[in-house]
Image (cartoon, rainbow, N blue to C red; front, top):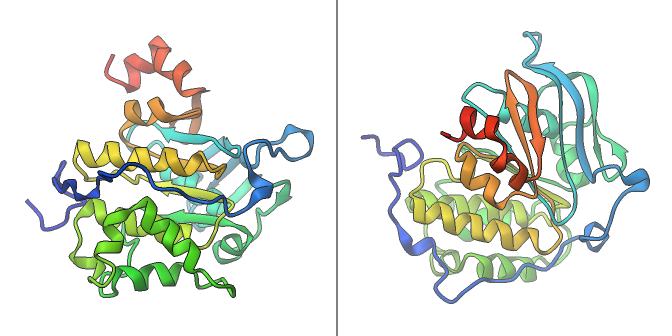
Length: 277
């Protein structure tokens, strides 16, 4: 067994991630992206539209792949290993070449923007691994998340602490000393410190125990209720679709199925091929 809580199967048994006092609260960072906001023409708030592309000069991994999310929604990308799930997320965030298709945020074409510029535009991205500064304290990690802000971010930090109470308790502890689930809280909290217009999570429950996974999903639901759109890649397909407003099943970089979470859970072909029957 490795020393990494991200690599061991259900290796993190730390229940301190749970919020015994109930849910915290997050104030919507961008009122214009609240639950009733839609851009002109009913276009999704964030969309990677018919994306074809790959890394560098390598072959295409995505093939006319489309994923989208609206304010107040949780959209999940599921599929077998090697299906292009994380690649689709990275394409939306500008980490690989989109050779055909486009990425639009709140009606603006951002296809040619760098990831850094997309953060400034309002995209918060939490990668699956290497997503915290292990030698820095929890509070320093959160402060790093506010690097693009020039205003007082103390209220946002208190909101993060309300959402994840254990982080306030451990705010002066090195983030690298935390459990896997607590590290994920730090990573999500740091992304929220930017006051994003959309939150993107690449396998946020990788390597954590079932109880921690359920608690992370509860917190993700709570954040989405503020109106913040959440786009998420998940290997735990059934559990993710249970909380999803919309879902995308990818196979070999293409859209195989799409619909609401309930529709995909009820689809016999989806259940047979991807959910274990």
